[in-house]
Image (tube, rainbow, N blue to C red; front, side):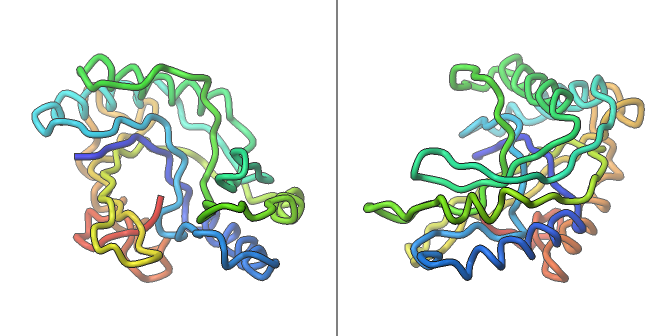
Length: 228
């Protein structure tokens, strides 16, 4: 199964960003970008790729411990950036140092479990909004300018999520990955040493439904959220 650890922004933060993205989609060339869907928005902490199912119990336990060693912290969506001419993203401000430490701990948890990981790199938090479909690349400068003044409301990060990514197989243009939250690990003293709080499944389901505006997103619910 294809897995990654992530922080999922709450419904209110998603709604604010969605309004900003709606304006971006009115800019020239927006149709040439492959936009991600709000129900799949997240900040990746550690991308693990294909993980053997037999490793999941130990990985879950180690992620639970990593989360328990990180106290909750505040973030807000802030501005935007790009990766060359390939992708457009929203940035984040606030407790970015703690976010980076959480990312390092999630990465270490995966490595200690035996998950083959890419070379560890400096963490750069971002929430992918769109990818360029093909060359010649769309000029992203107008989108960056429009995002430069974006400031979301502050929200509290209280959980680390383990998410499964199901790649599209239909071959239909515009089809997106489907995401399924397998586990939510509470941060800090709310966490259980070595384990995720089993009560988080219901909370994850409720949050996913709110994030998707009434559509079930990151399951736990059995329905599929879309886009990474």
